[in-house]
Image (cartoon, rainbow, N blue to C red; front, side):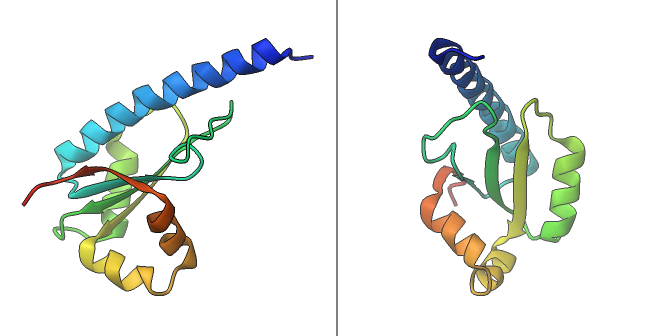
Length: 118
């Protein structure tokens, strides 16, 4: 049986692992040309559990489709924790947000952690 202190310790370890991976993933996405990176989900809201993951939306350059970007990202991004990364071009994001309640909620409750300056 887990004690309260053991649970807290696991949550703190998970929080540190998430923070470390978020910094690494953010840098890698920036190096790939990300225009905007949005963190959403429970971690973005400050709710960390021992099973928490990272949920990220990134707006990428229109040199590829969002689907192609996601393939590249999942093939190349190094990560140690579970991570869901959704990639869109700005045009795809504009079109998709109108038909996706999930995406609207993620954008409304998420927080921008990086935005490229023009």
